Length: 384
Image 1 (cartoon, helix red, strand yellow):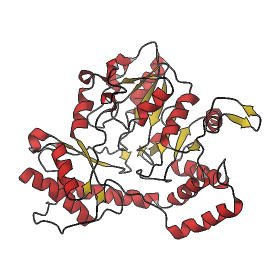
Image 2: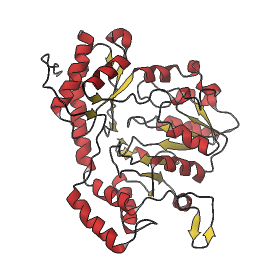
Image 3: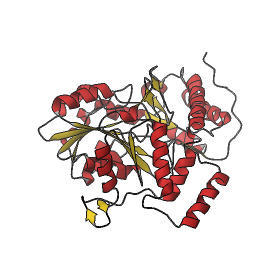
Image 4: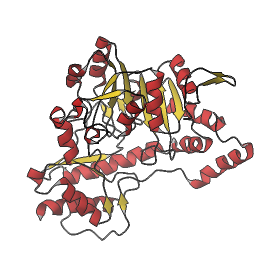
């Protein structure tokens, strides 16, 4: 049943409401771990908490192998190195800039493919037309935790002999038909940045299906060292330290509760916004278990009567800080807009979605009264 938005003005909320808020373990549970670090003096370099977290994360995610790294961007850079990707890689313009930056840092040319309007992810029907003799991989993104069409992407990759990497920075814990989507493709990368559903302050991980590939990733994250005197590859310093690892270990205990609280917040948003003319909500599929990492809405200015940016400003004036994830498109930034694939006429859906999207505040500690205020401001915008 659709619940109407309260037409009376909600109580004034002075404290700022940001797009997200980190879900941290209780400080009293962190302190004994910190004391252990202080006693051992082991701060990094594959320490005991690093090893414990890597194993616990693998069990939680139900994946064969995980490799912890210092952040999600380094995870992308290493993933491309680990698979020896070169030439051109087909990817999406509708993502955080790190997706394309990792390609450029590896001297790879990104080739932008348009997206699907329902899932905001790369459109498999438009990939094949972009494949050239220089194409070596597809770098797809599970946007907002909405999974890509992995079967269709894998079929294309198998036909043309391409590697598949998933930027799964938004997809911690997402499952399709009971299977974790991180098991798709050759590699999946995670980000544990402070803005993410699951955080270690900074941090990330690479998920792979092959022990030999994990060993190469582990070499690459530690300067390429195989042992004290042997360097087998030009690696980088991407190790996760012990402090990040203990935050990760303890955060595994609280992440399921966070997801359930976010699911409740998403339900509140949906029941209050679904009938507002000109506001489009993302479609949820029955076979997907979502993590509710974000709550995007899409504002059609012609129907709504007010532009997305005007709504964005109106919310900020009330101390509410949504984000326009992802605007502008990566393809519209100076570093990329001269590429042939970046031209606006090649990416009509991605450009339209980027011009309409607004990610509303979403975190487990968000109060129902705060949700009411946000929805009231949206309702007033169309009513004024």
